[in-house]
Length: 210
Length: 210
DNA sequence: GTCTATACAGGGATAGAC
DNA sequence: GTCTATCCCTGTATAGAC
Image 1 (cartoon, helix red, strand yellow):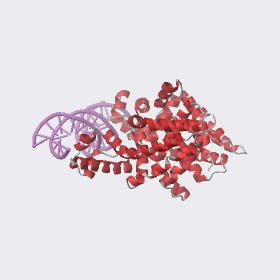
Image 2: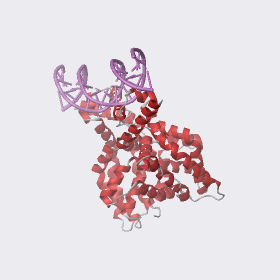
Image 3: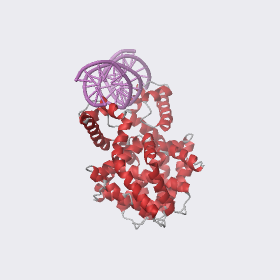
Image 4: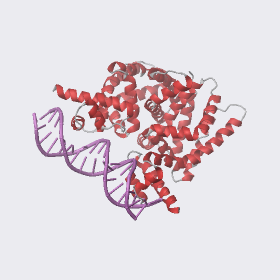
C-alpha cells in the first residue's frame, strides 16, 4: 500500500527533475528508474508507458493550476461588461506563480515541462490537454472574444495558437534565453519577469488590427 | 565522383520527404536509406550523424533564402529614414514563397523543417543558425530597432525571441492547425495565408507599448 | 498487487573488409 | 566510397518471485 505510493512518487519526482533538465526524449526510463532507485519495469507497471508517465508528471501541476484558472475565468465571465484583454491575460500570473508552493521552483518546472511537452512529443499531450481541460479552455476563449468584439472567431483562433507558440517556445528555451539576456544586457530575469514581459506582447498581438 | 553526388543527393531527398512527413525523431536512418536505396552506413559516412543530416537538409533551403533576405535587409538599411515595422516584416514573404521554386511545396517543407528542427533538437540548430547567418540576423535586428526607437534593445531582444517562438511553433504544428481551422471554421488556409496572418500579430506584439 | 529479472525489436553509430 | 556485421542504447512486454 504505502510501498506503491512510494514507488510511484519516487518515479514522478525523478522523472520531473530529469525531464525539465534535458527534455522528454533525451531522458531514458533507465535514467529515471536508476535515479528513483526502482526497477525499470515498474514504470510500465504503474504508468503503462513513457507517454503516460509524462502526462502524469504534468498532471500533478495541472490538477492545481486548472481549477484555479477555471475559477478566475468564471469570475470574470460573471461580471456584466466585457473585460480588457490585458486583464484577462493577467489572470494567469498569480496561479502560475503559486505553483512554487506545490514544489520548489514549481512555476519554472511546470512551464518548462509544458514547453517541452508541446514541442518534444506534440501530439498526445495536446489531445490530453483538450480532453481534460476543454471546458476551462472554452471559458478563456470566450473571455478573449468578448474583449475583442471586432475580431472574427477564426482570427482569434489563429492568434491564440500563435500565442500558445510564443509561450511554449519561450518556456522551452527559458534557460538559454536567461543566459543570453544576462550575458548581452546584464539583465537577471526570473520566471516572473519573463511572464510579465510576455503579457503586453501577447495582448498587443492578439488585439492587433486586421 | 558522380556516384558520391548521387548518393548524397538521394539521401537528402529521401530525408527531406520523410522528415517533413513524420518529423525528425520519428524518422529512422533505416527508413531514409531504404527509400534512397543506399546503404545504412552511407549516411554517417557522408553526413557524420543524423543531426548533421538534418542540418544539411535545412541548409539546401537556407542557402537560397538567406542571401535573398540579406539583400532585402541591406536595401532597407540603405534608405535614409527608418522603415515601418510591418514593412520590415513583409520582406520575408516573397523570399519564403519563392522556395516553392526550389522544390515542390518548398515553403511548407522548409518552414516545417525549421519548426521541427528548433523544437526537436533545439540546441544545435540555434548554434548552427547563428554561426552561419549571424550577419544577416544582425541587419534584421538593426532594422527592427530603427523602426521601434522607443524600445530598449533588451526589450527588443525578448520580443524577437517571443516572435521566433510564434513562428516556429506555428510552423511545427502547421498541419494540425490547418486541419482544425478547416473543421471548425470551414477555412482552407494555405501556407501563404498563415504567413500573412502572422505579420500583423508579430508587428503589434513587437511594437507593443511597455 | 507489487516488484524483479530478462528478453525482444528497433534505434544510431562504427570498425574493418573490400 | 561502399557495405557488412556488430555494438550499445532505447522503450516495451512478460514470466515468475514474493
